Structures are given as C-alpha cells and as structure tokens.
Amino acid sequence: MAETLETQGQSAIDHSSALEIRGKLIGIDAKVPLLDGRHVQYVNFDNAASTPTFRPIADKVDEFLKWYSN
View 1: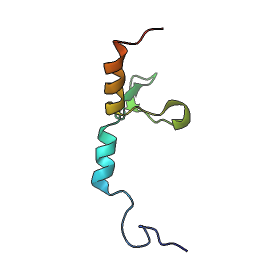
View 2: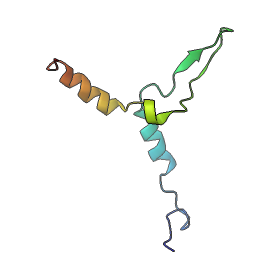
View 3: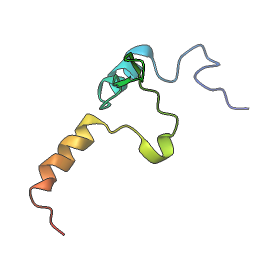
View 4: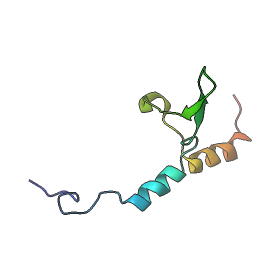
C-alpha cells in the first residue's frame, strides 16, 4: 500500500495552511440569532448545496457583474 503523508508523520494540510484557507471564506464566523436572543456560531451541514464562497471568487464575480446582463 502507498504511504500517505499522515503515515509519514506529516499532516496533509498544516495548521497555518488551514487557517489561511479559513481566512478566505466569506461568512465563516457568522453568528445566527436564536429565538431566546442569543447569537451562536453558524454551522453549515450541507456543503453540497451551499458551500461558503471564497473571497477571491466573490471579488472576481463582483468585478464581472458590471458587464453582466440577461
């Protein structure tokens, strides 16, 4: 069997890379209001339908929207 990076004692994505990726996601730290008035961390259970967008992608979409029409 082929050895993976994890079996060699190395993480496939190190902590700093994960934080860098996390920092580019829009809304990752969003809080949602509850009926009792508290605000809690949003948890996305359906990434297939509503994956959070990365900031560089949103920036490119915004750049293009001035030329978009239907």
